[in-house]
Image (tube, rainbow, N blue to C red; front, side):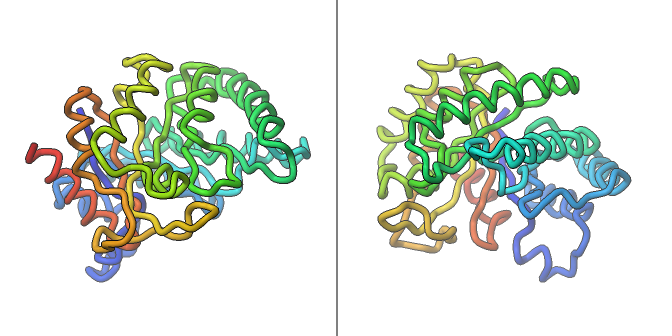
Length: 281
């Protein structure tokens, strides 16, 4: 079943006087939403008992939880010691996720740095093979690890690169951030055909079963010559992408992803709006 929810808490969550992540479970459920993404963006600063407490709150409300691993992961870093930190960021996120009772870890794959694109991608592939081995060694292969499409041209994470990474092993499931794809492609996602081409390519490369429950991030994003600049809200009329054509294609292709809103302070509201658009079709 398709799921809709926010990444982190909207401004309205705090305006209503909420302070604890446990309260987000009911807040999300009351808005008719199905999932929630907890971000370790700035680092994994969450104790075991807190992770269990959050998991219990979400389980009580019947809301699925996923996590976003720290933003400073870079599997293309030439320095092996720095790459070792990236393994720990992903595995640490997965360990916390297990305590919360979730099953999806989203992560940014890499940055190109001073290397050629080809060198950076090849190094990322080799490191993701090592990460795969660690995942099996730690008995985490029942979780989904989701490398994300990235919005800046200097980042590793085109749609094609994410497909390459996901071919390494079934533990990898794509996270397609359509705002990032649109920003990197200078506004390339406008029509249902644009979305259909992208998703049919991924289905052809990875198979329908791998793609059926893939992970989605969605928001409007301001972009410039080098891609992503900043996240916006649906109120913005200048930048895309729009969700309605994607909703149409998800229905057509019978895909049932987690659709996570990353709107700027309006995540829950925009997740609810996307669910309304999808259900109105």
